[in-house]
Image (tube, rainbow, N blue to C red; front, side, top):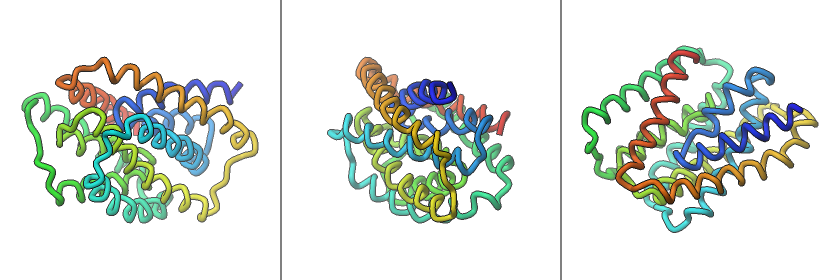
Length: 239
């Protein structure tokens, strides 16, 4: 029964994650922590998230922006490794609240200045990639920060989703290998459950793609902002 619950959660989280460019871990990590210890939760969700990023890249491959992928991805990968090694030695609650406050502040700013847009400067992408990678390593939820920075560029829908997927794939590869090298393993029933969870993530991504095509480009940024607000409130109130 637990496998069925996790599979259903995966469909929901993968759908939101594909639509927003983040969200899979933001939804799954807090829920799975009810049943599983933190190391196993991060490893299990990381595997599902890895495949989710593959689906994003394949479904929206026409939008891949390799310049942004490199600028976000390289510092993100480096700081993911550092964050993953610190995962058990950093006050999780404090950093979660700081992250939540940052996301809420960004959404409020976007509501005040809805036309705000950053130029795609190298420094902005590098800072965004490094910060999101570090938080991904510690909490497995760095995608929300990555989504906030990418949304500042006001990218086309396909570019936003595909680029977020490619960056996430690189970050997830590093943190998964780091968790594994530190001794984290999945229980046998969870390993078997991946046979259901991975197809469930594909189903969620496919459902999200059908929704994305119906959202006007002018409204897409506000959709991202709405999910950022939800993630921020969750992290601030229930870290």
